[in-house]
Image (tube, rainbow over the protein chains, first blue to last red):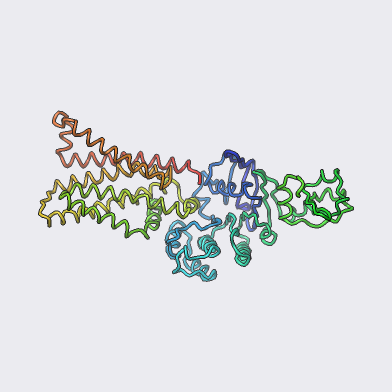
Length: 286
Length: 216
């Protein structure tokens, strides 16, 4: 099986929000960044994948198993890390293992102990005594102990200091090294993905904006810069987003349209640039 | 069955830090039994008190947002629900056994004589009361959470009082069936067991439906 996660035409309607027709595929051995501004539908997508929300329509396959019809099989090799811990704060780490390991036939106690050691987590501590970063590592340690093939992380870096974020990215890179594991990584801190992600799925206002290779995504856009007098009304209409300064402007444009901006300085766009400019729906950014 | 048992064990691990306070609720009714010099009163209070602690699993789950953990574990929602019912029934049975062992000793020390029939009738009523409380409580907790769901606790209490009132108005002697059941320990036990099983079957089914439709 080549694709660890298949999401097809996934939709969900709430009052005041609609996630519409989301389709993407995560192949084995890669990290995919799920990006979008707050409220765009990232967590909804993840909850639909995990069958925590009932979908309006669409299909989700985890490691080849339908996430509803074969929920148990789908979740047997799935690890999940949320933005905050989901264990009882009164549990000691040893109790976490005792409680969770029972549900996984391939739980490896030795691996759990080794991972705790590697992450500098003392088994005698209670969950509530761990820092946010350590709690995130504990969730990872559990997922690694039953050799979860697919890891889904929902905003794991929010609230983490830069050192912990860097550590997490290093852990994830190691995790997919053997080509047998994949990661879906939702975040609005897109700088984390510049380094780690191979694929990007960008959801904007509940709709799929892009899903594909990270390099392909970055190649689609450029940042152009120029003086205020160079920004004509015609040009600004074609730009995806503009940020004006007292001395000039910068704008996000499609790389295929770059010829029209030959008189301006063009630079590669970062994921942050693309998300920020496109989230403004092309309206001028003042 | 394995998954149901695992779910029950997971629930036990949730309330493990609160075992002392749960044990206290088992000890307290001894006082009521002693004051009222009645095994039935003691058992009734014991089952009522232990039923009040069934919300602990829901409270701990809510406090720690553990519905996300339950959401990612490879276990069917129906097994999760049945596991919780099993755990809560074990709590009830533990409280009943403790009370049936301790209360008669205290009452005997106080000079009361307790017959085998007293034991049986107290056990039967205890089981029935506990079932009556929990079959309403648990779907309520699943639907509304541990705080709002507590309101369901009072429905069976009210229901029990109404039943008592109703029974005093019914001339037992005129109803052959009721007379036979009440005066036969075997029939009383059998009918209670059947009623309790039926109540739990309906309650579990409702709770599973609630959980299946719940979005977290």
